[in-house]
Picture (cartoon, rainbow, N blue to C red):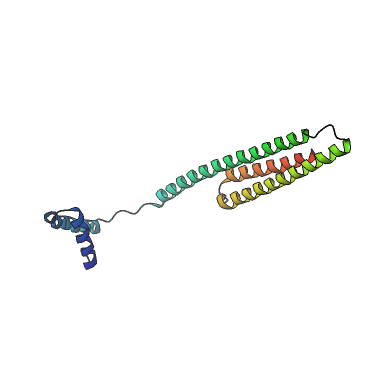
Length: 164
């Protein structure tokens, strides 16, 4: 051992052991170092390393897939709530106004709702893009399929919205 290591070991051992035990512990540590040098550990086979890496990647894919499902549910909830609010606002147009005034009031409410829904759609698209960039490394087909399904649902919802 180098002199610096000896000083560090002396300092460390003095904090945990009595002075009469320190010498025997130093001898034991020196013997352990000698045995480690005499009997080196065997090298791990490449198959074992590959198996460990595949288990880790499978566990990460499960986590990523579950987060996509949660985000998909959130997107669906936003779309449903937005559609419900839009339908509620359209139905609340007062009947007592003339047809022209009622029509203009309905269009004004719908225009404000459309602007907020368009902002939400853009945010959802940005979130999907972030998911694609951060979690999909090209090896996870389930994740790519889930993202494509969510993207398709958003586009279909948007198209249905404009059809009325």
